[in-house]
Amino acid sequence: MQSAHKLDPATRLPDGWSDNVAPQDRHWIGKVLFASKGKLVQSLTNWWYPPAAPVSSNLPVPGPYFVRRLFLWAPSLMWLVDLRCPRCPQKSLTSKGLYNRVRLVLDMTSYYYLAAQYQECPGCKGTFIAYDSRLLRQLPDGIRARFPAVLTHKYACDQGVVAMLRSRTL
Image 1 (cartoon, rainbow, N blue to C red):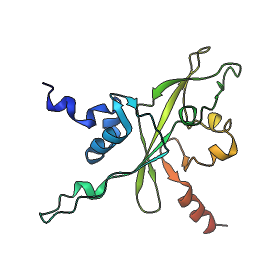
Image 2 (tube, rainbow, N blue to C red):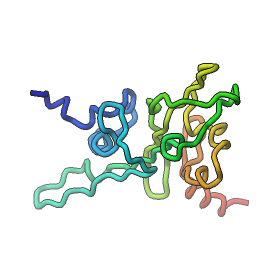
Image 3 (cartoon, helix red, strand yellow):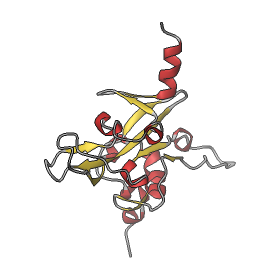
Image 4 (spheres, rainbow, N blue to C red):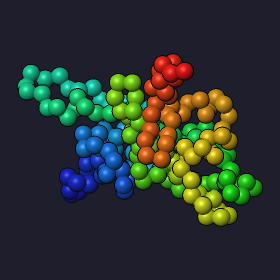
């Protein structure tokens, strides 16, 4: 018989995600996005949404009302795009799994998580996150337009917020 810890979908998250994902989100993300520990489900999409808060006549528990959605950026898995190494362009990057950290992105009404694929060059052994600007520039316009965020070293902001701010400045 397996222990309750083994059956908990939150244990399927990659190492490092527990530091950045809120406790109320770990369960639903592990359940819908991962088939097993660190292994993604077969059918992937960009946006993943939490389940609706349960309706009950008992006193509500606040956790389910503050869950966040997740955006998964894995262009080589979803669209089979051949990404080239920025250092040695003759080499194609290979998947190294998911990056061990998720980013928190500010949106118009709340925050959402940004998770991305990790890429490795077999030549120079360099590693790159799929949202690296050098990799984003390699994507066709239709795929690149799906990426929703503007990233800085520390912070991330949704394109909708940036568009609103641009309209209010000179």
